[in-house]
Image 1 (cartoon, helix red, strand yellow):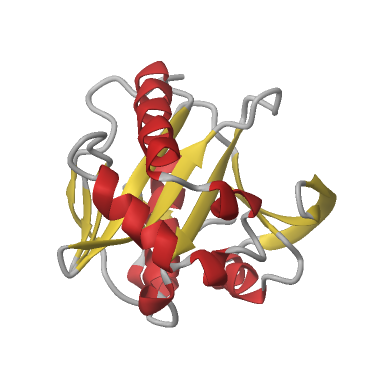
Image 2 (image 1 turned 30 degrees about the vertical axis):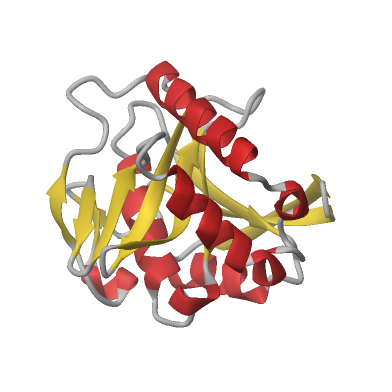
Length: 199
């Protein structure tokens, strides 16, 4: 669990979060559809499958997916992961929010906390964020955190823009992205990966 003042990032509960997560995605379909092709096929059963896979991936050390909780309610998700077949020294961050939580710095704060966590892993020299080039809100998050546009690559929506931040470029102190970068909020309570982060 990562607490950022009024914002909490926590591991999903496969049973307890299933109905709420489905509802959040269901009511955000129009907002997410241009960037996430899977939303129109989303069902309660697929929500259950997604949550089960996230638990397996977490235990295997491949992918850490967090519920983004604001005011006690789930408003989105964010993840820290290694792309299959990607270079060992790179971790990636993904995030999405329900429209009720956009425009309030939530994605920037959540992504900033995951940048800090990524650089806690041995051998991680770079963190990347990728998104559809037309998704300017996602790009603004990366830019605010000090990422630089790096390259473009093929994606499910046609093409995605990849941003990259190197360890030496990030403003990270003791695993916490400084307040000047995140704009507000610092990690108050961190219980994210246990005592043995995967390598």
